[in-house]
Image 1 (cartoon, protein in one colour):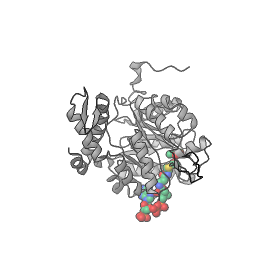
Image 2 (tube, helix red, strand yellow; image 1 turned 90 degrees about the vertical axis):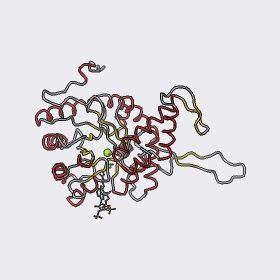
Image 3 (cartoon, rainbow, N blue to C red; image 1 turned 180 degrees about the vertical axis):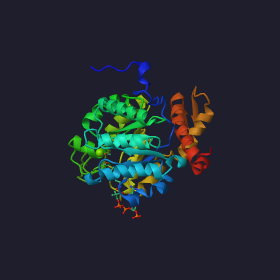
Image 4 (cartoon, rainbow, N blue to C red; image 1 turned 180 degrees about the horizontal axis):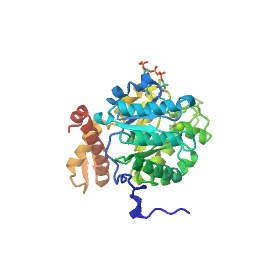
Length: 352
Ligand SMILES: CC(=O)SCCNC(=O)CCNC(=O)[C@H](O)C(C)(C)COP(=O)(O)OP(=O)(O)OC[C@H]1O[C@@H](n2cnc3c(N)ncnc32)[C@H](O)[C@@H]1OP(=O)(O)O
Ligand SMILES: CC(=O)C(=O)O
Ligand SMILES: [Mg+2]
């Protein structure tokens, strides 16, 4: 049976000279994590322009990068850190490294931290199965941060993409103060669970609920259900318990913008902070979906204004308000304020 670290040790740096872990997550708007294949020079070169539209730019070194381009992708990620000042546009710079049992993980992390550690906000770790994976990466990153004299801690973001990872998601979220959040990885997770699909996220026409038969034998209505509901709910609860963020991952049917939007909307409503964009067309969808709707923000502001300290019971537009709806309103207004601070158009639309 493993034991938790004593509370006073939890926030100590894991290597002499490494920066102290954050006690609170930095407040960043992260509606989409935009994936760039860094070995393709033409695409990499667009990162500066894309950074003006995306909240996070991620250099992907793992799946989708051909084996013979792994080193070129790593070099491309380092070039991105050197060539673009992502922080100047308020854009996060992340990298997805290869998984822990791959031949590339050690060099990915070593080079990224020692050569681009002061530019890199977050390392995304694929196929995390339990807290032991986070403990190993945490210690290694601390050693490298100390060696390279990195000034602020690099955070860790785990992908939830194996059945074992889902079983252990609470322990993964709580494993280290370096944890930034978790993304659902629906493609690998489907394979790991022996789901009979060939998709990257989204629904499936066979996964639906059908109404009872009609006496006259007429056609029965049926509706597709969300295959990811259980996992997203489990992930959101684990992340919120740990005070970190939950994200929907990729939506692979690039041409189906409606289905992408619907999947992102479900994730937003269930508590996710953002999702991945694999293609420039998905950036705007994520931006719109993960920004609260203007009428919701205006209504939430009405609740906060009517009940400054959240106590008692009020009726607003025919709906009962109390402490619990006040807290919901605060979630929406706090997010709207973060978005308004970044985006002047949204600030005036939200009335800030
Ligand atoms: C399960 C998982 O692990 S998901 C994560 C791993 N997968 C990825 O990271 C995939 C990232 N995305 C991509 O590689 C590409 O978007 C693909 C392969 C899916 C589609 O690429 P294409 O067929 O070239 O798309 P398309 O022709 O519509 O591209 C239009 C333009 O957008 C550019 N573009 C496409 N994807 C991106 C991107 N992710 N970032 C920046 N620019 C991009 C193309 O270079 C092209 O530019 P051009 O007009 O100057 O030639
Ligand atoms: C996101 C990811 O890596 C997956 O779905 O497998
Ligand atoms: Mg995967």
